[in-house]
Image 1 (cartoon, rainbow, N blue to C red):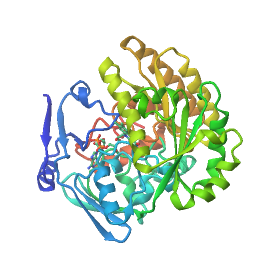
Image 2: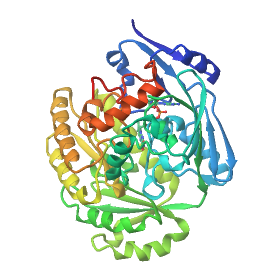
Image 3: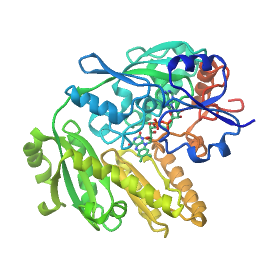
Image 4: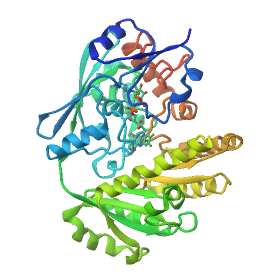
Length: 442
Ligand SMILES: Cc1cc2nc3c(=O)[nH]c(=O)nc-3n(C[C@H](O)[C@H](O)[C@H](O)COP(=O)(O)OP(=O)(O)OC[C@H]3O[C@@H](n4cnc5c(N)ncnc54)[C@H](O)[C@@H]3O)c2cc1C
């Protein structure tokens, strides 16, 4: 037995393959950070890696403000298409080459979740292929059939503590489309989706240069607290720390030795917003505030993770990163823990979705330091569990985070996973190594 690779160029071949019920991991752009694509053979001994990236994509507007995506389409392609037609997409993952349909499978989020909510809230309906290769339609307007699991009600009750999170430790399972949202390809293959988009408006970006958070984060916290009242006017509230900025070329770094928080706002709101928000900040000096246009800002934002990735690859280092989101009351606690982690003596950095209390803390350990970093993350997740936080609010669980998610899943979640898997994946053909495959009796 070994791991086979299969490349699909059309949906009809995929339907035929699904009828064979072969266990497979379905892959789109392969940018997931929780699947070790470079060493899959070590984790999945046999089965098929089914590559969907060759399935020709198409984009169209079904109704004004409703974008239909079929096949393999990247966020970059969809953004460009929308702009050509006077619209814009409300989800903005940093990795623009990832697939949109895969984005539903990972319940992908991004900078703009601060102002526009998560991708889940933008899905109108979708089409997926079931275990027999048959097309099934799911609507976000229809409640999930309660007969799918006798424990569904308890599951939904348990979920309510996470309703303000971008992604909880387990899928929402409230409306039909939730069956494909954040379930990481474990219940079927999405071949089409319609998303809400908005009329395009020009944006601008306001930057704040701040002291290093490791020395003094009072200005950071002031922005965090005050920005919560501006969610209808601020689309994104992002953070890049001095360490993450040190990886990019010096001439591209707008604030060497400093942290940056930046906000995306509507160009036409600039003056009012300046008076209502910026002028009220007590801990930020006026000379530390500057404006940047959209394309320059996006280039900077993408440059940081890419530069870190390049440096790591050169040094043979595997990044060990967090994806934790906490509630407002625990944001200071999270920063305190990250301060502790920062003092370990391992190269590290911090960036991410500041306004949502959702930051990526990354260690860049040598081989010898890896184990220590993972132990530290174990301790971090125990605290996140106590705070009722979400350990993986953006990149999902995949294969690499399965061990860490276990304590966040209790009998009720496991029972629902088991019931839904039995109904929708009776042959265990959809990513059988995924987090929904619960072994043993509950
Ligand atoms: C530099 C960088 C930045 C990133 N930034 C973000 C970010 O801001 N926000 C974010 O959410 N993620 C981010 N990611 C993670 C990643 O881009 C997302 O998880 C993305 O949704 C994966 O898309 P993909 O096409 O690469 O899917 P893949 O990696 O190919 O697959 C991911 C999962 O989706 C499943 N899947 C793929 N296609 C389908 C389908 N058609 N139907 C059902 N299941 C399917 C697969 O089985 C797998 O479980 C980032 C990654 C990198 C490397």
